[in-house]
Length: 256
Image 1 (tube, rainbow, N blue to C red):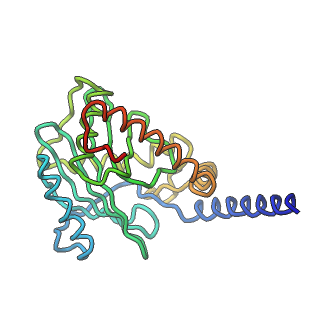
Image 2 (cartoon, rainbow, N blue to C red; image 1 turned 90 degrees about the horizontal axis):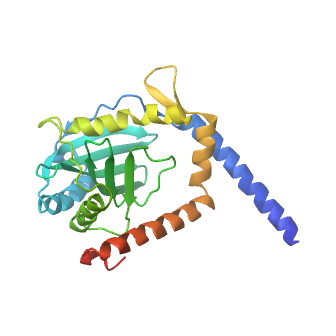
Image 3 (cartoon, helix red, strand yellow; image 1 turned 60 degrees about the horizontal axis):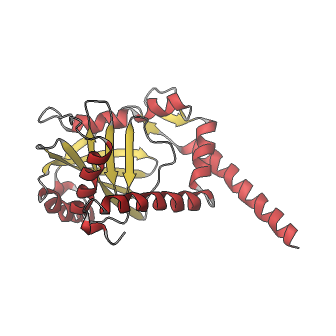
């Protein structure tokens, strides 16, 4: 009886992975060119404006200047993305507060990012959603979903820079055109994944779609039980990283 149950469960799981792959391959679209629209906070839905207003003074308290709010449109099917963008002109660190809105759900996270003259970029965020594809080769990404305060996460970001890229010169952006830095990141998303074999440029020339290989790998990583193990190991790795930084004096992270 147990053997029959295991066979049935395996068959159902296999079927879900097949149907998930097909659905993802048919529906996934990513724009080839990012064209964000600057909007005022008053143009945001009240719930989104409240989230941005709550985070803005906390970032300004650690010397980040508010550069504006941008509507990035539908980067993923049925999901609209809004970004509040900030810059610390003393250190050339950038911060973005990202809000993703889908039918019935609104998620948000904030991220600090610094690019260096060596070509490396270091990003620190509290996004609890793991990516379904590998991070960019020249980008180190650290995800600490348990760190909910911008000041604490920024302390972590600065100590990670000191630990992993000591003495490197941070690259600034031309004043008034800082958003181009984020646009370049989005514009490189499709070509980067095409190079890895995950995506391909569609016939319309305006969007990238998934290859069958990319759809299968992304579906597999995003479904149970794989996603459960990915979260477990990712959280353990990041907790170890936080503990190593705690020795360096990050008292606010004792909760980790």
